[in-house]
Image (cartoon, rainbow, N blue to C red; front, side, top):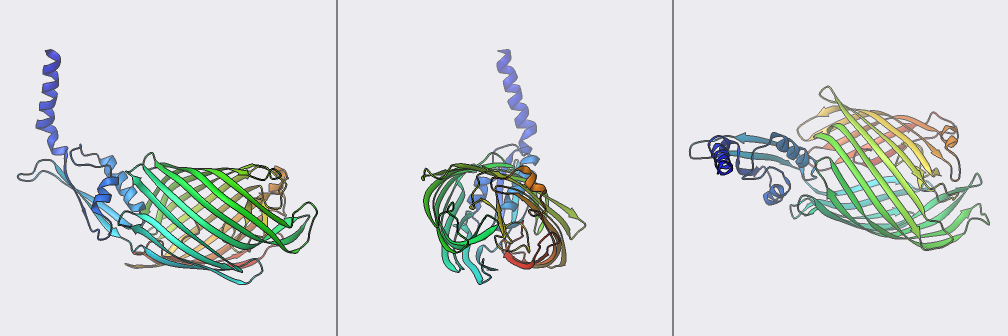
Length: 421
């Protein structure tokens, strides 16, 4: 009896004093292509639940990360006449999300090369990403991708990727180089799971075929001139993301761990494990300054092979160094740059940056002392420009010039779409 009376009094007190803090209505405004039903599906604040300021802030972080949203805010309206509870309104600023792109670069023999493509980042108004690309780098390559991050509610999604890449690759052995025609045809399927706003994983399988055909250069009895092998890999990616976005300005910390186990169908080729972690930190300095840093630590099975997994490359880790100039079975790379918005208008941004890219590698079959070898150390300071459209997702055209200051250094210009990291 006493227990029943206690429960009744608690319910009565909630109705009398807590009703004003119950969310009676959630409204989405400012969106034209992004579906309101989709936004309500992924946000945590729901009608009929108690108002929670922590969840409101987490919702804003999530919405700002969506490709279709350039900015998001919220307002809370308390009880009015004939209205019980609170009304929450999310106001969205949308991006244009159908994006053609083109990357220009030089191939391994300094011929002109390019990649063109088209991506839609908000298919059906539900932030589904779909894209295709064509690449000409001496040989033709192509690929398609589909990413549905919220296929099964807020927590579960799916990614499907297919690519057929053919390039001319340098292979390093016995202090000399040979060039091979390299083809990689792959199909990948990954499940996506979001634990909360900061933590998520992707895991799945990749089935691929590698085909190496000798073109020219030095030969060795230990290195085949023709090699074709079917492989598959298990992949696990863990993403910890505490980055806050305000248009082009970022602040916070992110860690992205990528683990892979690769199995070969050819008994003569050993299985191997590869893992790397990108640590990224961003901080705001004044109204227009942004300091960004990325540290990559990577290690793979230390197999003595000319086809080592970590590469030294312009477009991946060291700006100005050249295209695939070396390979290794472990890597330490630091990229750090200061970005400053020289022009920051309603829709256009011109951003300048000064940077230092530095890295070192372990030789295939080598030791950790290789990290200290001057032959493996690269340091490239440089400067760059960014041309940005604030209302088009990832519409950032970048130009960087890197100048090497270590042994046997080079220099060069790197073009690309999107920030380098």
